[in-house]
Length: 322
Image 1: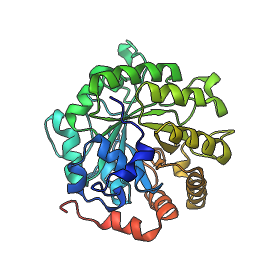
Image 2 (image 1 turned 45 degrees about the vertical axis):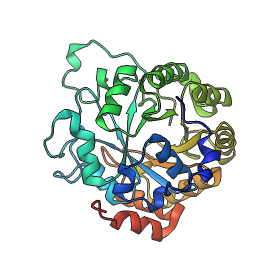
Image 3 (image 1 turned 60 degrees about the horizontal axis):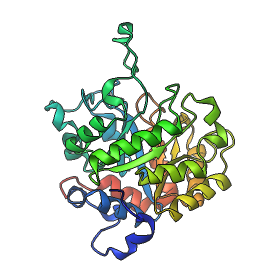
Image 4 (image 1 turned 90 degrees about the horizontal axis):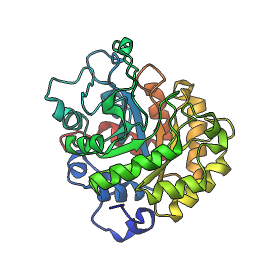
């Protein structure tokens, strides 16, 4: 079942802390609905840091996800994560079904993954290509169930550059995964860029009709490009879409998915403030500053811009043993 009217109903729940105030033990005890309420209660001050686990980590012997967490991210979003053959370079050796739970143990964070509604290629020559699409990255009901069983908190249905992910395919995958997992997972949907579909570029990346269809097919959270990251995407456009998603009871993520996570801190600060103006609930920063994660200083800069040093340093310093 869809998590209904999260945006307007969270105030009725008095036992769920804001994500801003949650420790690792708090998060471990929350189900998907409670996590959504904790996000909504934070009033636009939640940071999601995307990272890639299949590449060589920036600091060699610790995962990129740990670095993203250390710089203040509340949610770790794993891109190119294969639920059938999970790989996180530099993670201590565990059974593959325990990969996500081990990352949670090390970081104390919510964990999300990207799944993509595309067809896998059959070209055997691509076996050595780490960027190739694999069966375990597809947005299918089977993979949604595997993600839930592994301890994933949120699945984002989206597309990497050039993979040809269209909004119709996202809708179909949403319906299939929601039917399979029920209310075990937070489901988010949308695109950070055109993802190879030229007709869905610029202001056509997402429409109100798309948002309504995503919501009706099971989305709890709607993803939109951050203002200034995609040609034609303005603060006014995103704000209108955020307001509409909120009217439907969904939360929103504004995303930097265009390698601007590798820009200087002044650019990041400006995008962060624009996103704050739109009314978004979750602020996403992408994985391509360095290969596999944003520039660490940009994660911290973004966090300070939207919630100040108090909440940023609190998140950075809080022990995972609390």
